[in-house]
Length: 145
Image: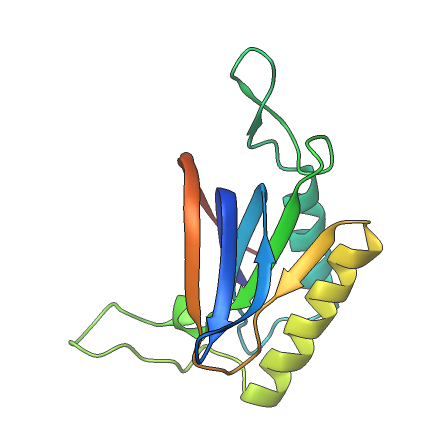
């Protein structure tokens, strides 16, 4: 599983001009699911993101996690994160999950975050989505579990 996270002032995802998910201050999570991902990867990534200290404390240091700042998460599926870009001029997706497996893992990941009392908004798996955000910092990190 691969995730790119961005600390945001606000973010939204829309489909055909209709906003389907939006948050204020928090974290935008772009999530790519690989074919061998399962429950262990879901738990590891969900725990990491909930504990990751990327929000500023009163001294301007990244010392607070999403719960400590009362932030939200917007989770958007993005299969292109699992692309193999090492050779040629076209990405390969042989490491990516099948659509059925990818959607199941995506839904389980969202549920795992909600169990941790994080307010979560989502896009729609497999849809052609437009993502809008104001990156705060900018602060962006990549995780692979």
